[in-house]
Image (cartoon, rainbow, N blue to C red; front, side):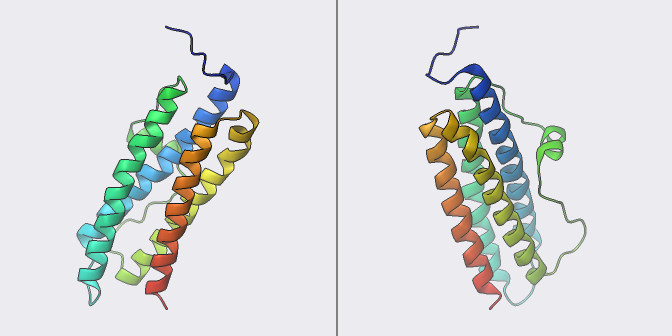
Length: 156
């Protein structure tokens, strides 16, 4: 394998890739949960939530690709199976029928979890002067914080 020399030592890249793997797992799990809720939402807010959830899962589908590609750019394999994701994610699944309002609350929690996971990687990123990953994390946090706010607004 060709040696990677991007100005970040291998040990630091490995630590960052590990944190990004958790972010990828949280993001993919939130994607799956959001897609599930899009399919199964019912009630008076059906149309609003159905469309909102679709927008959110489409954005997450793009995000997981960006995160995985950053892991690969750092020189490490990206997790890509349900079993890997289930070991790394901080997001809990809900099984069975979930009411629309509980879907919203659950997705708020998921969005905030992704923000916390992204924030937890920053120390390693800053220590390595990895501006590319810092930019990715900042964008992810901004988007998930905004999405959580929009979801919370539905409950007021």
